[in-house]
Length: 459
Image (tube, rainbow, N blue to C red; front, side, top):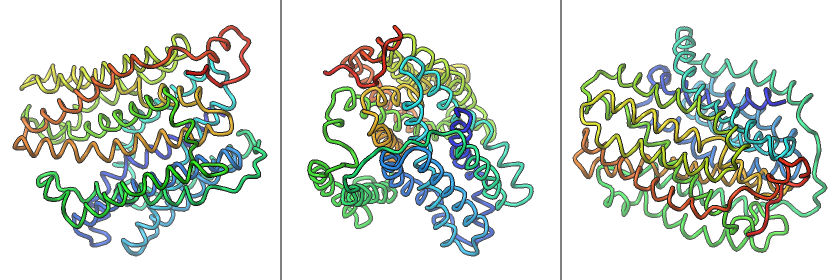
């Protein structure tokens, strides 16, 4: 069963890693300009954010296996639409369908682990799933380069046999239980949250980091930003009165959940900042673009190696020390980039620390806490909420790094300052992590062989 979940998450993660190299070929094939081609990513991010809480909640309502199969089917269908699209508009429709399906795969996989693994074994399982992302960024560019020798269409067609196999395997191996829930589905909450996330994504995507204040007040950003702010209390009020809320307010207000949500937001910021490392390497180390891309390898390799190790440490010591170490290492690495100067060795060391730190945050530790805090009937929704926070951090991270870099004149000094700011934020979160509760009672009991419940001790 774990293999099925692993392959599903890998399929979704690979799609992100292999699309980038194909952009020039897609742009030439469909005849769009450089600004328009960016919507391949923008549409994906937007609908992925919308699809994540929806699919996660549906898995709580209708069972993990049904929704996992639906997610994989949507991802496969979207891939087919993209591959055969005659126009760029049709391609964007396919990307949206892909994103909705992909948005549910990881949260549902994590919820399945919560349903089927005892507390004292969840860390290892989540750690293996978390290692997928490091693998994807190692395999993705190579696989993308090979498939591009045929045509860019094959980057998406290759998903079809994988999705077909996954549906057969998941239909046989994943649990088929369906909760007995008679309350009506929270469509109003779903719609309000979708509109809120859409407004936030559109506002961030229209930000101009070179003219941050002016763009914030411009017609392309301010209306969407105001809409997102206005929709937040609307969504909260709807959830307070919903019979079966998309996200239970009582869960959100638990101390552990609030802390982990803040860590997820900060992790998203740090993760996105890594996109700018090749630009920093070109400016600071005076290497060519190809060499700069290879300098990301320490980050990727260490994150892939560290994820399963972090999972094992979770089972041994609980989430608090692992999260604290992850935040401290990530902060140290990001701050170190500010003092690397022209030193290649320090640049590699900073990347290794950052990658190792992120491996202790992505995938397992934060999801581990959410599984402990959420009841069986809301594990999917809790995992979906965590993905929304990390996705929001990713959205804001690009804008923040661009704005800080531009304010410092760009170039090496600008990127160093931006990474320093993200590092300071992460260091602040490391201090905040001292407020976490130690290992939950459920895990302690589970290690003694007597636990049957995953509900944590009260605050």
